[in-house]
Image (tube, each protein chain N blue to C red):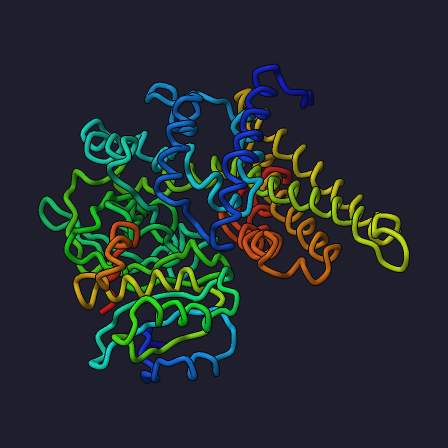
Length: 111
Length: 388
């Protein structure tokens, strides 16, 4: 099993968000060119799970965010950290608004 | 045995309890139910408080600047410090400080300068890498990571599994087989900086603990200087084993806190929740669960304090520590399970801490030596002889 989130991208808009089940999990949000803008999680504090979390992302990024992909998991905290570490390993830095997490997360050398 | 507390112990227990209830529990209302850390500003503020209280670095030996608590007092504090949602694996979110890897107190002066003192100052972090994919309950025989000497260096090749904190560690204490002896006399402990070429953290291992994950490590012909050996060549297992024995008492004590909290929650719920025209507390089925909880909690507490008192008095305490670990982990698991049953539907939601304690306590019956290994240890002491 691969550890990267490599599912197909889906279109990010209010309609697709509303069609998702209100579950817990992790996700990536990207722009038209598939540049990752956010690596996030939907936790138990989100009233409608991944729907609420993606609504927040849409509000935050506006029109720049057009794609997303996700994975349902109750281990959203450790999976989120893992995805952040993988992003850091692959890109050398986290998405701009998440740079504050770089001091907190660990380092992976998966390949 | 006399389990009454001294005036000083009573004061420490009450102070710790007040700290947990007034400083930690309110912050958890705003954290994710599976959170493993406080907001940095809250962490810094509370560390200042524990430093002022003289409780920072609880496990640091007195000669290195720690408060010099005896095992009994430390166990009593562990029971109190774990009485919040994250308390089982992250008591008070670490604001009482850490002591680093206990084995480093046996290191050479040069090694202490390089790894121990920076750790105590909060400048470096270490991790303990013993368990391998080949097994963890019998590490002396399971270790397949190999080390061979090449000039003034040792070359390590192999892998480790279920290692906590390796992805954030500056150095690792790694146990490798360095002779043809297939058992405990062929293992050496190496202190290895994690930026050494050949040291890889390959993946996160997700478990029932949703926030504190483990990792899998791989070592590819990692070259380690001779001076990084901790203790003697082929004497590493004694170093590992010492930790495994001593850790059992506080490990057991930490399990009791969530059980006490769960019991208090269940009692409150049973008194206020009504079914079929009367409170749950008036139903015999519920009363018996509450009573069974109380028996389990007291049994666990007695076993932990007995082990701690023996350790403090300089007596052999291996059997008592194993019994405390076995009883506390299993009894606390039963208590939290019953409390979920008493709560019904809300008991399994993330609105309450019960479901997190339930998941995390399940790991405690496996971690630091599973229940079956504790029974093996006790059987060896009770029946005499040793196992091949």
